[in-house]
Image 1 (cartoon, rainbow, N blue to C red):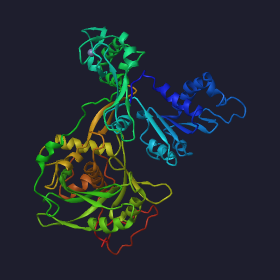
Image 2: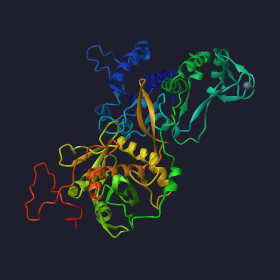
Image 3: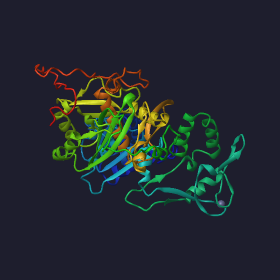
Image 4: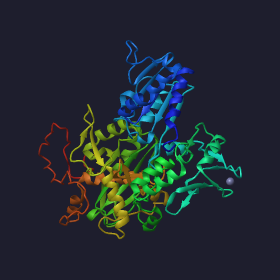
Length: 557
Ligand SMILES: [Zn+2]
């Protein structure tokens, strides 16, 4: 994890040069994009090979006839170097590699095409080498969303300690110790944390030479290093102070400065809801006796590797919402029996309201985007006429909460509903924050909701990120590795409610005229239709939409 101007690219070059000359191995270098891979090959690798005698004898010039070498693929005795863009799934799924180098990982896409995390994909290439080596490096970006920070936090977290030339105490250089006269950044100097001596850039070379890496966590197999521009032999402290004063005027330039000069993540106080406050809204109801306002039940299902979590949601007029329970089914969701024996009975259950009505679950949405995708498809496609839907979340602004029509999973008849998760997150957080009293849009919490569930329900925060100087709103987990099942289940259960008919259906049920909607949720794709007469033949449509019956349970038992 590093700033700019600290020689990282040279470090990477040295690793490659060493392996070409001393320890030949198949090497894969990942750059964020194909264009950057090509630029790196031309501007960084080619000069090193050209100017280093022991390398240029081993790697033939791509221009030479029969060299077998291209811009992105270099052969040498005993190995090869393949350079790929992290956005290119084809390049990641090629041959085995022993040395995997990942450059600027914070600029990697979340997924290589549709294949998943590029680093995971590339890591699989190294599986057959006992002596594999994986190297990642990057300037960090936003806290909670930075790959390099997450990786660094799992390492032994080494910092470079340098001695003060006056008191000999070793210390890590930190920005807070750089001081200057008000308005005169050119006077900036480093103040020793121990003796207060004022150190200038003239002291730096000697300090760097005598410095050493010190871990701050026990070693667990991953060595992590952090270095900032404060150590750079090519940048002076007054230059950094000048750049800081220029950058701090605007949040976007300050973010860039903190990322590239200090090599630290940027933390913006985003729009968020504090989970502690939510505990106060717990009420004494549960799934055994539903509050009288509940008109419709939906389920949002989050599929993990070892369990399925289902959130049962009750909906009333104007989308007033009662979270009824968060139920965890432990087992292997890849196994159809688990679904049949655990999820089926749960979805078939009926619930009684306080005022004596009996309600069934009318729609359920299960996430197929993460784990056990095929099993989710299989389960949902067989039950789609009961409105059990396979869904997949798609981030990004302006997406419909529920799609106008389902997509088809390639080469199959599985209808897949792509839901706009960011749109629904805005709804969830907006309602938690801005709707403090029961009524339209209020979210009620059941007796069973504990602090952990509240934390999960509010596990993200809305932050402004600057991509090439342009502000983009994104949702981020508030801390790394926070569990999010309650939030995700609510999102899916909300999508199921919209898919079932949304506010219009709820208004019809409440015997009232629909009221104008305030949030930007899509038009309801389905309007409750009168049931066909029992005797009428049900037309079978070619696009495989099952005949719709009024109510969920009919035909289910
Ligand atoms: Zn000192």
